[in-house]
Amino acid sequence: MKITPQLTDEGILRELGARLAGARLGHNLTQAALAEQAGVSKRTVERLESGEVATQLSGFLRVCRALGLAERFETLVPEPAASPMAQLKQQGRKRQRATGKKTTQGKPKQWTWGEPA
Image (cartoon, rainbow, N blue to C red; front, side, top):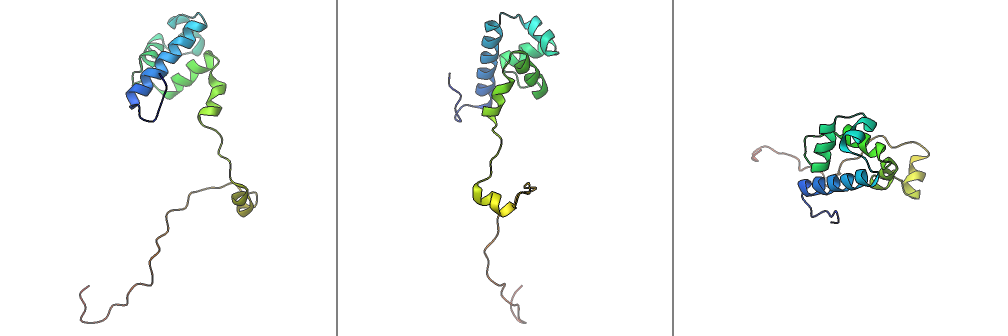
């Protein structure tokens, strides 16, 4: 199954779990052997492969690393690249924060006596 934005969170977790199970079997590893290599419990591997939500991201990373999949995270979350114009504006400095949306309101109307507040 292809992972698409239309899938629910549970659907994506189940698909990722099935892919991890396939990668584990491709390496001819049992769940217990993978858990030992990754430094996690066998139950963590079981939860990841079943798509259960109660697993920690660190366990997922360890299992992926043990299966040789960690280098693929670069394509999952690529390093942000600023446009050439943004680089020019920043003059070599690293961006520290996001700017909020600016409101485009004119001058506030001056209040006078007799008008409701």
